[in-house]
Length: 98
View (spheres, helix red, strand yellow):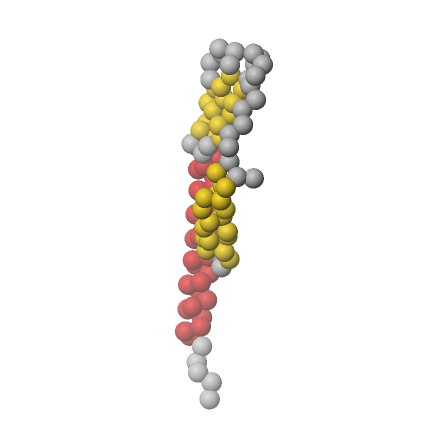
């Protein structure tokens, strides 16, 4: 295992997530003169794929996935905001008990 470089405690939805960041030595074992492929995962471009064969790099677009996640998240936020608003409205309208 590498050397610990950073420790972060991030609050998320009433919980805490502990993130540990390590510096690890990079080991490359490309000693053979063979065919290799690298895949870089992202969000706007879901994947960028390159090879050592000389073929054209491939981009797999991820904007539709990103948009779908955005729409789903926005829908959940709207739902919960209206839920809280309705709950607060009902809480305020209850007459005090004697």
